[in-house]
Length: 131
Image (tube, helix red, strand yellow):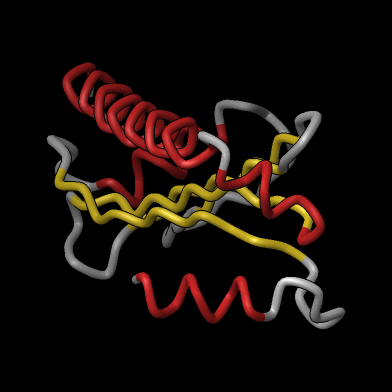
């Protein structure tokens, strides 16, 4: 990790580097017996005009732009099983902000990622218990 970081710092003023990103991805086992249907049903209940059919799948994504970063999130069914959700969480910073990124931002990212994944698991398990 230190070797990679030192390479990034060596390229700090390289115009081909447009952003720095912290990424966390996890496959989480849930209590849902059919997560694919559960997630699709949640989307259908929003009444946003999504088509319905016999085979359902879903991928929910949301990006939030804050003052100094963009937070991108996504959840979908996992390739690891019918009860497993795949979550994606990242913080993206502009490349010219490397010093501010290193100034305590990783702890904010880690805290946000932990909350995101625990909230996903809690919400899915509540929905699974309701049937």
